[in-house]
Structures are given as structure tokens and as C-alpha cells.
Length: 42
Image 1 (cartoon, helix red, strand yellow):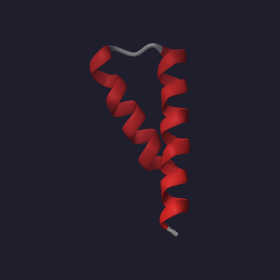
Image 2 (cartoon, helix red, strand yellow):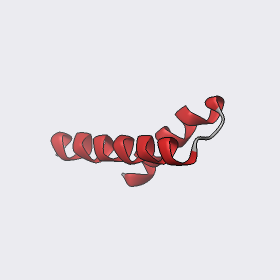
Image 3 (tube, one colour):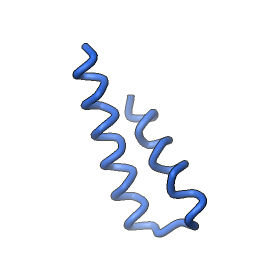
């Protein structure tokens, strides 16, 4: 179970990072976007 949760957050972080690279938001929003994608993926 902990491994599945970790993998889910890891995939969310990767997807969030890709979104940040594509959309190029303001620097102060990058962390928020990545965190939201990561927790939203869960």
C-alpha cells in the first residue's frame, strides 16, 4: 500500500512538472501546480 501511494504521488509530480514546462506559469505558481497535480492524482 505505501508503495502504491508513493508511485501515485511520483506520477502526479511528473505530470505536474510536464504541465509547468508546457504552460510556463509565473515562478511563484510552479510549486503550487506541481503539488496540486500530485495530490489531485491521489
